[in-house]
Length: 533
Image (cartoon, rainbow, N blue to C red):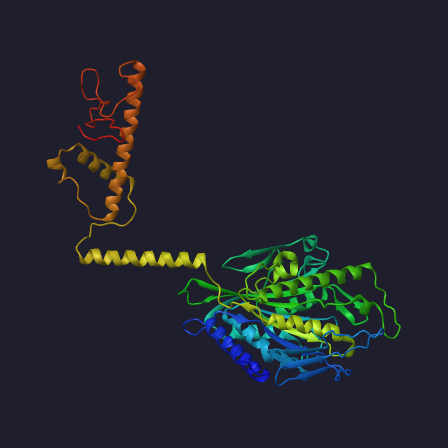
């Protein structure tokens, strides 16, 4: 049977819809809670007076972007079959949006998850000069134009202050990755430790991936956190080129770690979550950054070329990780290829709620970079993360809880003994005098015959039984030591051959008398000693 093109298309759409519904059902727990969630992607356009209306079409209602580069005529008359039209769909598309709209659209939900105990990451990606740093930090001199990071800090401390039943500890770290080296932005530039090569480590079931040795500053207010954020931003490595007068030459990650536990002390559980605010360096082409359209020449030395090489290299490896994670078949993801992907391992396919702001410069001169940015953003939407709380145990609080439990159980035992008329039972450790008394009872029991042995031992508690077992063990070891000494002495005197067989008596002399007047006869029986006469 043959189908028309319309029928085949309809069948494909139905199959795709069924696949999406099946995927949604498979990604849910039996109780309806989501086991995994895709990375949220929001595209933000940089406001410009030279918007490429003839090449870029933005449909904010459908969250769709269409780019049509058009076919360029080939000088030799060869047909150009390169793809010129690109259609993209995202979770959100913000065209000429304000800073407040950017935060309230998606960023607020990620920050709220962090306060509730789930890891979160907000990162900005795009070409150089597309507005990534403005989206993340905003204008530091204008309160209305503040970015995602200052608003997130205000959100965190507002919620912390409102939850009086929970004790929060907020710790901040700030670092940059410059030329594949990690630098601590919270240390003084002249500090020797600030230029150490820090190590990326992973703690399973705890902090996750973190950089060991970074300065961790505990903050108690929004003002203290903002001071760290802005002072660290001023310490970042920047340079000037044609597309950006203040271009960041490094990737920066500002991490806010929240540690929360109950103030009542009922539970020893500690919930740890972290918020990563990632401002990626912009991808760039040296041809566009070195040459000015108006003929202005910028001094680009070997240092800037090296910086561009490392930036583009790390972003290329980032895209490779995204491509590997977006595939259905499991495969190896090369997180260790670069420091950036190593640090972002939790944010890409790990335990984290991740939000990506893809910033685009919608001008005709930047169509190639715009298509590249949107392609990675679209691939990022296929990456699945798992977002769940990370709970650990506070050792000090757990020890105090166990002490209280032991004290309460002792009180319960004392009350039970009083009601059962067992006033003589003690639960404290035995004194040396009491241990000597129990040892004498064990000795009398070992010396007595079977008729009298049953009346010599009375058990009042489990502790007494354990102490008697310990005393019997001590008697046994003493008897073994005496038997070894006696055998050694008689062998050296020539009275008994070296090899003793099972049942050979060791505690008897030549006249057959007792070796020990105390009444404990030693006899080696292959695997143990017998006590008694």
